[in-house]
Length: 218
Image 1 (tube, helix red, strand yellow):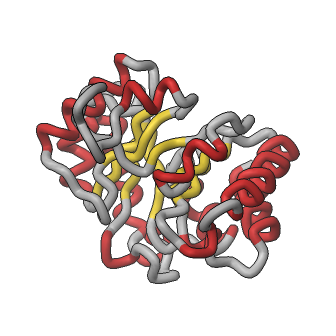
Image 2 (tube, one colour):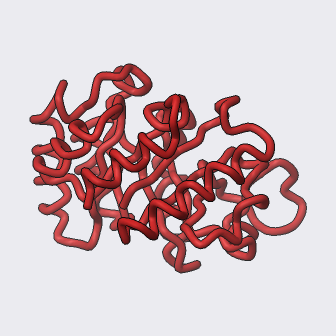
Image 3 (spheres, rainbow, N blue to C red):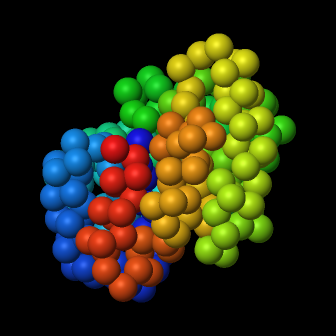
């Protein structure tokens, strides 16, 4: 799994998201690699019918109806959204909310990508059996310093923690990934994919950078 989180970067604003997703579609098809994109929340509808998985950056424990401003899982599902990030380091939520959301997305047959900051949280939340756990040390996010190089032991310990849960959860590596070498190193350490943001969105050439990452994962 190769997930690109667009955050709320200006580079992806307006109809630029459409151009971006079309580039991802071509590369995904060429390398036969599953690449998912998480657009800014208000732009999801522009690309939700894409041939690649579109995921939400956040989802709330809220119901259909009188819940103004909340992101409702059931409505995401109806908009062809594939799944959601949960508990990203820039949008942390409570343990109870995490538990409810992983369960809710599973019931809706949507993919859950649970973000954690350390191995202790991997051990804690792997028991919930989310589809993916993405480990992202907060101090490395957006730093250009990849966790696979800066803290390789962290990935190894996280991989072992996920395996110890004896379920279907897979580990993703995030934070500071800026090159194909970073991606290859993460894979060597046992990661089953990557969660990346600024390393791609802020690149001079989206095509070049996404291709470099895709090759490293293929």
